[in-house]
Length: 213
Image 1 (cartoon, helix red, strand yellow):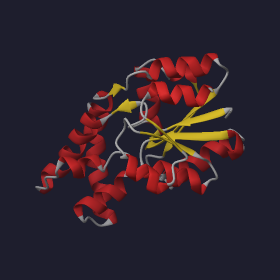
Image 2 (cartoon, rainbow, N blue to C red):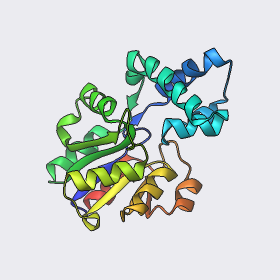
Image 3 (cartoon, rainbow, N blue to C red):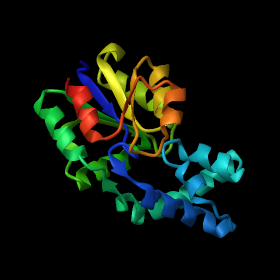
């Protein structure tokens, strides 16, 4: 039984594929670069600078410029081109009613993450929102989790992270947290197992059963 539950955002709470795909396309259009859907999906989860470097062969400076273009679209439109996964709102309500402390831990900038939670009327469930910095060193999932643990004075042994990509699992392991992998997001079962996810959940119902049992 964990007292403190950390949730990833993209691929765990929200299906954000449309907004992220469109923002990446917008960023790359002036450069004449087109990516496959598989390559676009790889942008969901990791820090954006890393994704632009990996998928487009860009230098750090070029990737940072692409991120600036990406955010131009994302702030204007892409941020709300997303939807909640089935069962997530009832899951959060049940956990809150059961006295669990819920936190957000996302590689998305915290200012965007807060807006998304407010948009879906979920913000009152969360004790703290930890995200990446728009400009700063806090970008990786590990850095976000360290920021969350420190800011809220939490002990890793009392916490668990719920996420959908290997970056969640590996980031959690780096700070001493177990990770629950969800299979309805953007990572495969094989990806999550190879990264070392402690548990796997097919849907929000299975996740609720695990967290409240």
